[in-house]
Length: 302
Image 1 (cartoon, rainbow, N blue to C red):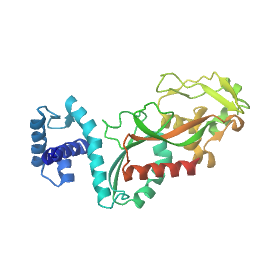
Image 2 (cartoon, helix red, strand yellow):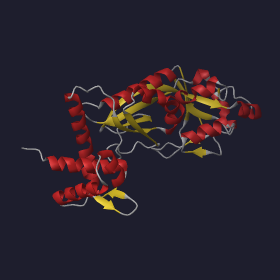
Image 3 (cartoon, helix red, strand yellow):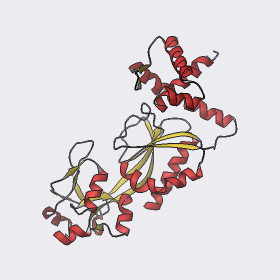
Image 4 (cartoon, one colour):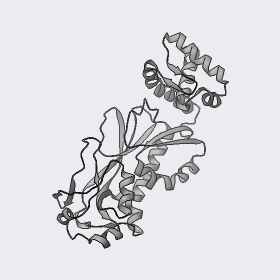
């Protein structure tokens, strides 16, 4: 069956409008006029017999039919682009637009200080970083790759474990000077412990301490419950209380003395860091390059 080139072209225009946010930016990216972009979308809607975009003077958003179409077509067009690059002998070129969704703490404490190195390696790459706690729907959100702590929750994605990082119990020198240093985990019942709410159960995480296969749970209390790991980190370093954090995130703070690890002998619990990307036979070179870079960062910070 012959391919309808005009249909593919119009679909590409739609994807560009969604990814850039409006007709003007899509026109710049495609080398067209805004009116040309609008006509292409109108031709697509006429061909399909449904409206795919809601248009207002301030924004352009997908209709319900448009969301379904974009979720199916986006990965296919990306695959066509990758196949074309491969056929042209450019299968290893890292270029184009890469949209990544990253855990906020990994983004601020590990990725951001070193991202210039990644961009210097790949000058033809345009990178957009979305920092958020929830993984979300990568396809409908237009995300190429995501990095998150915790075990995989979705079987529809390709997940690559980057590392397991230890769970540490820490406090600031100022807090310890004011309240004393607990000698063992059980003594935390007399301390202000920063509680972090599990986004899945909506309840605070239990405080566990692991040593040589033995697990001790302590019923900690505290006046502060957080849903944002960056805020908990800031409060802990400011002396507001004791916190359980991931070693990968606080390595620099421990090295320079901003935080103190309380129970090194009870820190054998680990938490995984994963990279996720939509299921495809061959991940684009830009996705592979970013995941490899995250592996490099995680290994260095472990």
